[in-house]
Length: 398
Image (cartoon, rainbow, N blue to C red; front, side, top):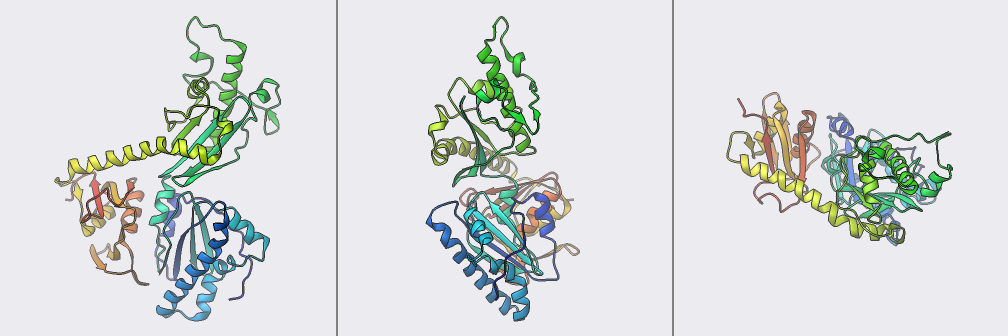
């Protein structure tokens, strides 16, 4: 193929709406490529090679499916061009990766998603995209944020099990002094201050005379909360506070974010790198994830022998199609290849993936989400070996 510079692409994490649209059946061929990537280090140079290998596998699968070479070239050319490091755009692309990469190719177009968690290397060709690796990213599972605050500095970081990286947030103050001196501005206007319910001056205990320093700290944290509140709008990732013990109550009073972890990281965070913050924060975050997973499994065990539980692939697909599933439990690395005909409610299960089938668990997950259900992607050992999927239904099948 002749490498060309890929057209501009937005590299956002996927939304549930994205995933629902991507799963629609296509007349054209769809190529789904997943691979781990690196944020830094010499391994960055290996990522374009890894993509080239994934594309070679995609081309081989397309050939076996009888696709002509000209169509293969057209389908893969944008992703193939990313392997060429002679352009500034491509070098920048590989220098600014997260922990995982999804590249979806269809009809000469490319969609790229950067993922905040590693994914297994995988290449699949079909008339539908393979989407389960995107589900966890879309639901913010295993992702979290850290707010590191001292009187002299504010940092916002985000990441996953594998690490954290700093994210610039518009309107975060440079430090307390910028508030006291009046230097901090929001856009072109001076920052307007709000009082969060239960916070601000209303949180001062009765009979306590607030000092000037306490007053400025409350202003400081209201501004911080407002800035990250805009960044975390409609977000559900856990947020860990890092700072000296006396500062956390100020932020907790000001914060309106409902996913704040109650146990902070103590000490001066200015002395901690992103990796050191991750080492301290991840155990706190993991507790939250394990607690939610445990609650989902407890719910399943409580209904497993009732008529609102389904654990066969066919029954799960029927329940998902009917919109009955409240919570779908899937092993994160599990697959079930085949096809489902909703018109006659017939499920065909096949031993291996092919160009003419798809992962039935993808279909069950998408249908569950479309009906406002929840999909829990669990660790391999969470469900019994003989049970790759389970569904807790809102009501029994008629």
